[in-house]
View (cartoon, one colour):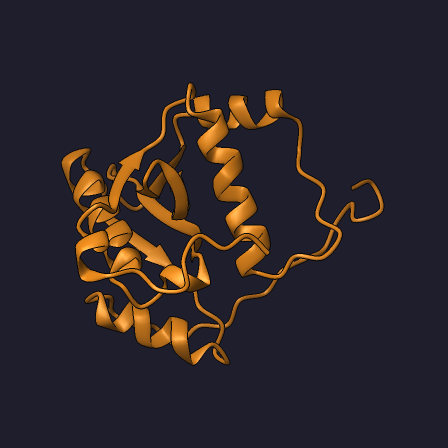
Length: 165
């Protein structure tokens, strides 16, 4: 596991910045995926090709914000934009959000949410939504602390093509 610091000071927190990635920021995107791999404890994870990931960054319905400390990615989130038929304004789904353990509870997740919602408001998004597992009290408390409204829903999925990966 990669460690940057055991804890960061309030002064160091001032040096954290969040930025939206462009298709040219492929190395930062890969760093973020590695953060996800660590935080989500993904076993036997195989990174897609660099070309595939760069094409994903070029996709207008996908965007990424990262948190940087001394130019190292310490957290971030990925989103998908969903056009809808109930309204002409699209929705944005936060797919993944993670911050390295040693940087958690320092306001970085809130910074990422704030930057994302600010950006989405500027570009005319109707709503941003995210899901959290019912067992994940930390995530639920976190999203509530950012001003999000909770809904009682159950998420279902259909696993397909698992043997191809």
